[in-house]
Image (cartoon, rainbow, N blue to C red; front, side, top):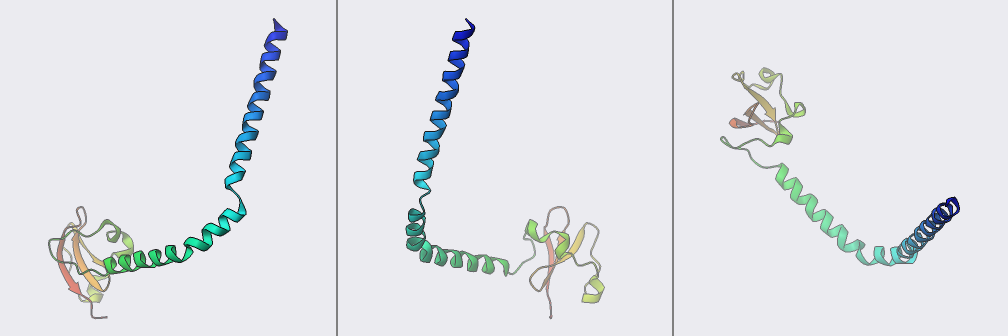
Length: 125
């Protein structure tokens, strides 16, 4: 009985090793350097143009003009855009629950909790 169990276990281990070896060999076929070179030279130019086009769209989106009643994006509500010395910039004190954020040469008075814009002032810098 022990001999049968040991033989079955050994056969299972050998079969598993043989399967993983063929899987690795099949994986190497697609990792051929010649394939990579042909792929890179064919599609590089097209991919670069597409990347630059999307970069320009992101830049246009960043320079939008904010208006009263809109919601300030969550990415601009962080402490990196927070204006703590509002008097130095000629701004009035924010009411309770609001704070000044500087976004793209605009001072935006927005609600802390919701991001609802109460006032927008264009910077003179």
